[in-house]
Image (tube, rainbow, N blue to C red; front, side, top):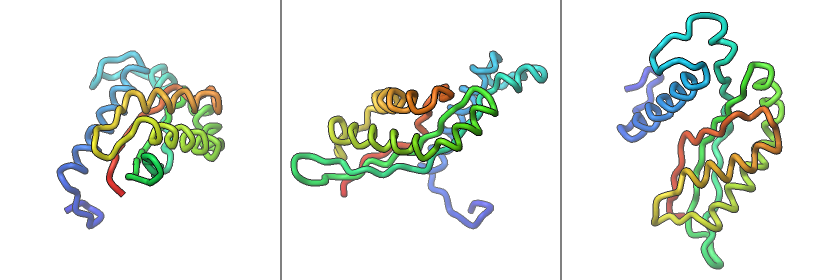
Length: 150
């Protein structure tokens, strides 16, 4: 039982642990330290990435003339500094619009509920769509993705 009264499945726990591992590895890479290491002061804090979470996206997987399934995506954007992160939070509606358009296109062309999602290709497509919206986006992190039948 979770502290808030929610029961987490092993799969859900694995997703959260995976997302945490990715976030920690990006944080360690950006600060120039080894994972688990300490950067040693204010310099590391200034170089650490700032995470901006987006609301989950849920787009249809269209095959032929019918909706065959749903593609669900959860993204986190990283900004290079705190000022960029606050500016990015102000532009989240524009970022969401670009991410939604790229996700719909990806789902139409490359997603199927009966096969694994090409996460690397999806992140690449989302990065290409989001970087022109705000140049402060250092990286697009894919926290969760699933393709299911409708």
